[in-house]
Length: 430
Ligand SMILES: [Zn+2]
Image (cartoon, rainbow, N blue to C red; front, side, top):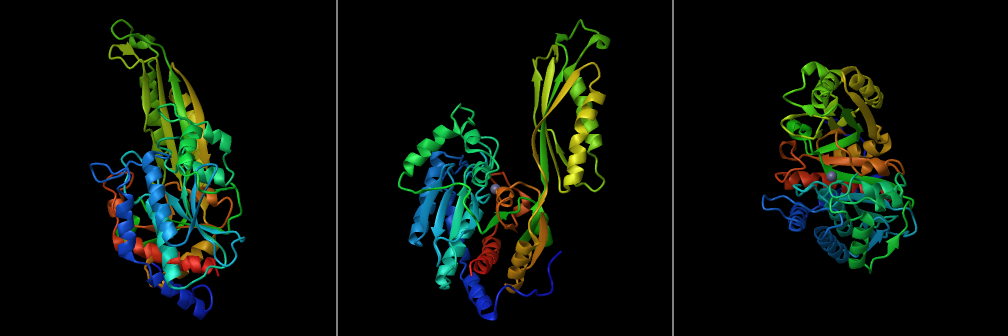
């Protein structure tokens, strides 16, 4: 729902004036041109971006960002997991910083805005604040988290999860890509190219974290709104299911004697679709991968392995649905044996009311129409939420299309989100 009444913004009238002035300094064209410049690194023929974590293309993106940061007097730094920070020290360089940013890596056929927008909106906000002569009471760090997408190295959100202490550094360093290159190796090469940057400690105190991001869904566009105040991130559980049958001759084995793993998998998946059926259409159930062995036309399949990606905004519901998967699999397995392995379990989360109210008051002060919105996709903010007050600002993307080379957003919507971010940074750094 669009906000109508004008809520009181944070701070005194004078401070409000400062922040509104700063937000007005956000330059839509400058922000747009930076997106275009960034999109050249890893540009694909179809107009998208392929910029894998810790790749040469990402290193080029770092160089570009660091260059822009240096022009604004920001100090670049990194850490042991390959996150990039650009620091504006403020009046008290020793105080816990406000972090804002997102990621610069992409899917193999990714778009120009996913992740990049959050980083560039942070840079634009800092530049606008500088032009408005705002001096933050504490540091503002613009951050580009390492490997959010989980495309080259799985799982994703490596930088933010290690930074926040949710995952161990060693565990992440051992992960290898499809070519057998370990994160440790890729990180060493990457770090060598940026040997002049200081390496800051992981798990340092953070005052607050704000992440601007394209919505990657259709709701804001449908409502004709420029900004979404993100209420939280829906939970997600992933599973791997293995159905074991028996390999047999397709011509000689009667149906009654078969242990056909693929037929069992089809029954199981149908059973799971029925189990997850939701009249409200809030459940997201996906089998995106199916591996059949031996995958030969004249052989009864011996085994099938498939993936389950299950999401729901309500943690209790997600818990209930996920916990029921094994029973459905066993009930539908027929003569085959089935095993279910849970790979990940991330609860739904709700961002703190204080940050959501702040963002919505900032949008009201700027007369930017907005609505509350739940994030259906995961973001680095999930991990920062564990260590500091965290919030997210969404802007629309065309048709809700993302993880796609056709991803598109308008300069004015990108600027609107950056304005809300700018004003919120004033409030968090006074
Ligand atoms: Zn993203």
